[in-house]
Image 1 (spheres, rainbow, N blue to C red):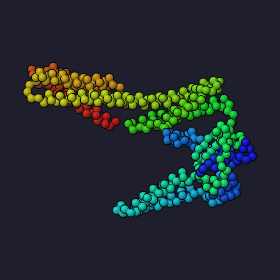
Image 2 (tube, rainbow, N blue to C red; image 1 turned 180 degrees about the vertical axis):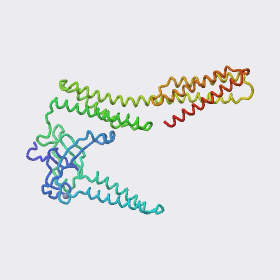
Image 3 (spheres, helix red, strand yellow; image 1 turned 90 degrees about the horizontal axis):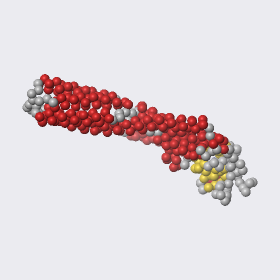
Image 4 (cartoon, helix red, strand yellow; image 1 turned 90 degrees about the vertical axis):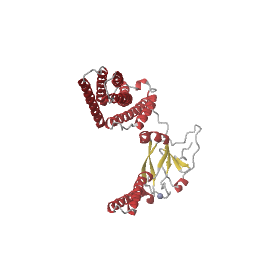
Length: 395
Ligand SMILES: [Zn+2]
């Protein structure tokens, strides 16, 4: 219905809407002057803002992309971005020279240099991002919404054409409805699923890698893990809908393999984390018993006079507290790198319980050497415990 008339582009407010296959007029997209057949290729990509917010840079892996050619007059061919970039570099260089020349007592020049440096870096960022001639406000399979065209150019464009009864925008002949074979869509669904699975795997591996290399301060590649999973699930839904003869066991195995490695590495981090927190809780409980036991032991040891029945009773309490501490730790699951610490603590607390039990069996009639030997063992045990803490702090 638009044949002969419809050029494939029109004005929509401050935007140019064009069919992916449309050829823009031979005029400058900024000022509408003659472009004299000069065309510049522009690569466009578009990601919905919501997806960009959720997944960050990862979202660009699934960006809609398009390539168009725009006309430019002689004046607008000279790239403003290059001028801005060169100017910014000069400012940064000048700031650095100032920094190396000034004395620390001088305040004005460093301030100026800092301002220059910030300005220079902003200029570079602007040159890289804002200096683009046109940007895509939206890209669909058939159309592109272009931001950045100048008002004179926009004014020269036809206004929006009538929209079809189904709400579809008009297209040039041949732009839409490229027939897709089941084999094609199966291959596409597999590629999407595989890319999602690979992204999930990369996220898990980055998480596991930093967990090993930077213990206690690791980085979870959430964006990749989440976005990979979302893509994988979305693609799998189309994949299971394609006719069975287009799905191969090799594809299914590849997907399962990639996901399995990701789950193992990510799961290992999760399990190790859970173990550490359980182990932390066990160490805290044991530490409370240990503090109570040690306090009571010192109190009894410092009591003047002969060994009494009360002293013996208190020593049984000390033995019981250390026994509980050792049992709690022995039952806990320490992460692999902390088993030496747990085993050392268990041995140390069992020794404390044993010494206290033997002391509780002594009476005022027992020989002084029996007391001395047990107190000497206690001192040695306290020193061993200090060694364990020193080694733990070093780890
Ligand atoms: Zn121009």
